[in-house]
Amino acid sequence: MSKLERITITMPAEMAARLRAAVERGEYATTSEVVREALRDWGSEQDRIEAENAAMRELLDKARQGERFTSDEVFERALKRVDEIAAREASGSAS
Picture (cartoon, one colour):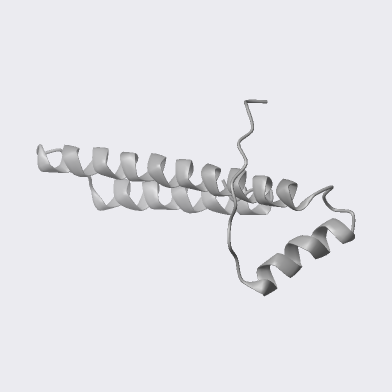
């Protein structure tokens, strides 16, 4: 693991209570573990969003350069994307 850095955060009381409850239930050893996992999940989601945005920018650039797609190609790509999202959600992974 990389070097740890201590930071202090302020959050609503309800959120802090949820962190402590997760620890009390034995789901995590410390509230820091809860926060680290949440930040890892957030980071993964940000990476996924950036990859999707990059793919969209690439498609837009191609379209601006004159590359065109038939309606069948667009529909096929859309269905493929929906299937990918459904498979990811079915596996319980948000990233």
